[in-house]
Image 1 (cartoon, rainbow, N blue to C red):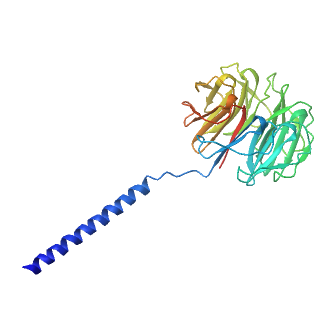
Image 2: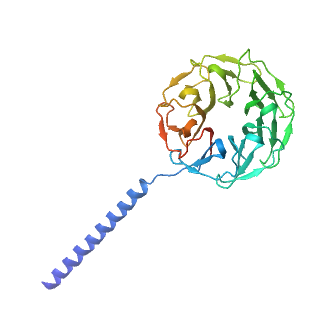
Image 3: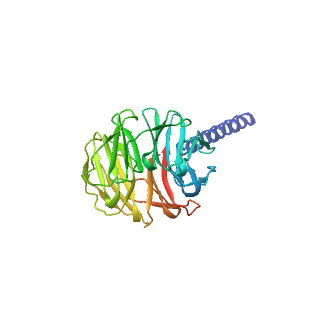
Length: 313
């Protein structure tokens, strides 16, 4: 009898151990399935007085030491290098967004924008300044053929396009020889982008021009008279931002719809990455959105004007 009882107790103990082990295994599986993956991409926001912030998610931002007090205007990424440009010919580079190195630009003119395309960085700025570099470290000056200040630059459809004051649009196939294009009286002195087989140029009084090849341009109805300052294409949507909290969206660059971001601050920059739109502007403004319609204010920790924001994969 004792032997039978002993065998019964041993069997009961074994079943309990197996049951606990299974529960522990199931619990571990649940924890693993619920773990969130963090993107390896990086948002970089730049602005007045050498301000430079980074974020992995667009919601939480960290101030970085730029090493300059010059106003910073734009960011680009290519060849495993981040490049920031700004006033007085300022050029900074970084491989990680944390440690920044000053580079010699060869000019004291303000640099208003920078982009990367065709294995080349291109920076544009005051008095028709155009600089190019293959690595972000060594820069060469190009002759633009204009003395107007240049504010926008992009590359697409095997063509460089830069835009600036007084109806300036220039195009080039080789970044060396530039041709002036007609804007039909529109001033596109903010930014130009290329996406979805379309160039989109922005400017004064709600100006939006589009072009497929950069040569001939069509004036689009934006529905606003506010100055439009920056644009991006993400999630099959063009997003344009500007003065007084203006945000416009379009699926094709032709028909535009106004959105309400919940701020009246001027918005100077916008980007898209990690399934999130981020726009920045005056008074340290940072807003994020998953759909370009509903926007959430984020804490930047500063009240300076942010000029642009960029996302690198």
